[in-house]
Length: 360
Picture 1: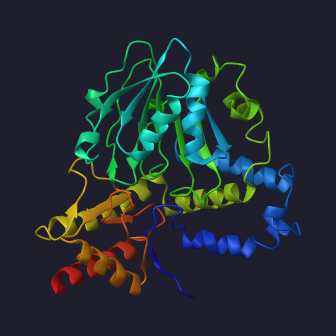
Picture 2 (picture 1 turned 135 degrees about the horizontal axis):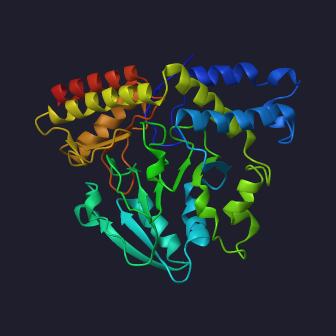
């Protein structure tokens, strides 16, 4: 069977063991005589999958009882709009920290619904670092503060999170959820598209503190109101059943690896391998992100010339490396090393990078 070194930014690598199990269960799920995709979302077979996914995520991430776990659709991009629709009243200001393209898009959606303010930004330095958490000084009458915990395009990541007191902290964790241990109580809401660390595209996870639900305006369209999904256990409309099923298998896999803390140790090792290779190349490879802000999920770097970049990508592709091209907005190279990317793939990439540098 042909398998490549998958460094795609998203949709991204899935654990091979998960793919094998899904293949085994594909045509006859739990002896139902049907594939899971054919089952009713009201069936007992699917209900077990749904409930297990919720309970497993709560257990693995130590989610307290005063938080809800939702499975929604529309990706993180729909959350950009749902958040201000639900949580930005007329007399309040939505506060945003700009650290990349996705935080810009989140801000742009919020501006359509009410007052906003940028309370920190690294845009002037081409998003090569994360502002210090002490720089996040909320405005008077702040409705919430929004951050993007990891920035896939620029390769930066928050290493610690601000303490805002009574002001809700909301985080887009689409590209680093479940990659490291965090204290859920630091956040009032976390949301993440699944297609990087949690599973395939199609489902968005929302971890929401119940207190946030108290003052949601009643005029919000039903499907865009978080209360709708809480009251109906994410089953108000037909959920993306297959995506949730794969997510559940990924959670099983995380537990088999030793839990989130074990995943974090491996992620640290993978990132250290790549950054050491870059830093020890005497300038042949240059990381975009400053030390202290470097992402352990997306390693972004450049080569001395555009031609060398093209040669690097072409030669790596011939050897089975996929997804190493940088985002079209900044170019260069990017290795996305999410949870399911094996350490062996990172070792192979480092060996290629050293060989390419030697030859050029």
